[in-house]
Length: 213
Ligand code: SIN
Ligand code: FE2
Image (tube, rainbow, N blue to C red; front, side, top):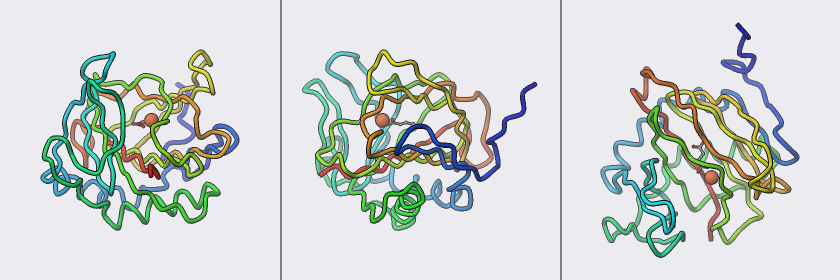
């Protein structure tokens, strides 16, 4: 069997100019990051959003931050109020914000101040097809994506949907940062392992930090 070179080692794997996979970057705080989720989802619950063309999304989501990504029959957008509750999304916890800023800095993006954090939840049957993050007004800021819980395959594509995607196994505590020339690259997620994670149970969670406004 091929040994997995990147599991448990704190390596930075370049994906493309401006994009890097920081192995284990959030490992020390992983449990504390997960501990915030029950409090946040008590304010804005996980839900399966619908899209204009593809029906109900398999990934369960909610947001924290001053604004949050939503999708419904009218399309995709950011909005300050959670459509489920009619109230503001919960604030981004300090421990989230600080981790995101440190990861961005490590990847070469100083002074990253996200205003939106999308929390995704996957089980072993859930995948997210190749897409670009393009609903943000600010394309100068990077995207910071934190993997928690069960391992999965992060799909790293190119500037066009037709470009062949490369799979990178992402584990609890790994962080992917992409910006600059890589900001609009296609990416996706599949291959969530079937099993139980000691801190996250039967789930993979992902925190995606963005500057949307
Ligand atoms: C996303 O692209 O929105 C999330 C990717 C991931 O879950 O790693
Ligand atoms: Fe994305």
